[in-house]
Image 1 (cartoon, one colour):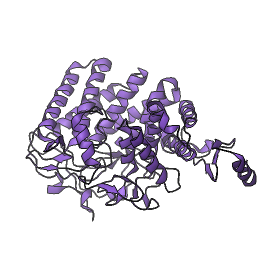
Image 2: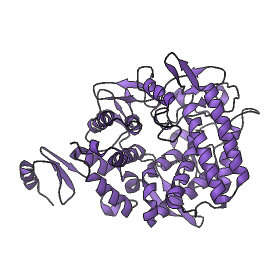
Image 3: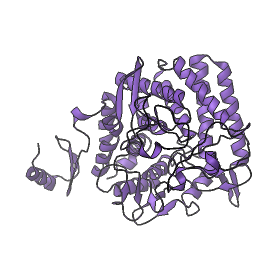
Image 4: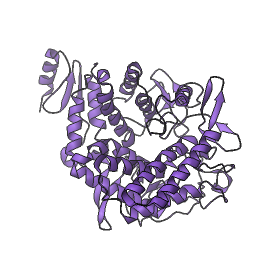
Length: 477
């Protein structure tokens, strides 16, 4: 182990940052010690992830940024992954971090950066097969739930969800209906299949779950009544419950899918959430491709395409705001002509549409929308002495989500803009070396969620992408 005296002596002589033999990153005046768990206490290890981590870190000139990457990129496998078997099949259960339950969205997003590595790593293949099986099981338990328990027969362990007025089933941790809860597992399955060609996990149970996804999306078009889902919660926070006995505000059935909650787990104001519906269009087309190629189910695949087409027409007809400088996307609408403009940092968001494949980065309407959401036109855009970015009702005013800063970097080709995003991320981690849920616009020491694996992994994903797309940004110390 390098002693502090020797380390200080070395730092005085070293002209630039370097990685010491014991894993300490040192630069003149600073040391950065890895915050990863000891090797023997890591939940899951992948040789491919470790190799990419080392290769990418070597391309980062800034020692603090390299240290943050080392902490964040493997945070999901290090701390949240539980691999085993369930019902005779591979099983993977992934917690969000500081909440001991698995969100359909988070669990998919947390492992997304490792999909590209799965073909060369059998341990990762086992992880993904297990997660695809687990997602299918969860959907078959209740397609309206957003979070699940490790034990599919257990009652919720979440204090705030145990008395919800809704049809809580065994195995469900929380039952907030969010469109993206069914989109993310499709995105993950499609990405894994494309990266590996492996179809092992796409068995009869998965096939049944995908038909349930289609059925649920159809139900929530609500063409023939409100459908089977309703949700209420006793809470001092109005965003935790829904209007009109849990069915949500009135809508005119126009073909879009109703969402009672946003990706933030906050209640929608108008039930047609535009980012969620656009994500569904992309996911349904991906699902149709898989059903044809893997399951040879032309009938269900055609139904998926037909629904995607219908939703896309409805979104374009009712989800667009016509401004003086051109049209841009609303965040939520009701089909009657009422429209809410804002953006929330949680993905799917308006800012993240190209990241999810819902449009191209240079799409004119997206560019106009992007300019609006990163401005005072968006009531949840905050700018202070510590940085600027988007938040949302979930953590309230002044609270910037690092996730929004990452999404800004993901969705631009401008090197200066990317460098600014990295500078904000580097200066607002409050000395922890990790990303947080949100931080105060003027004081990064005031932050929420010290252990938020989705944000950590997303930061790692961004750095890996930049190493290929904009290596010049990372080469600047």
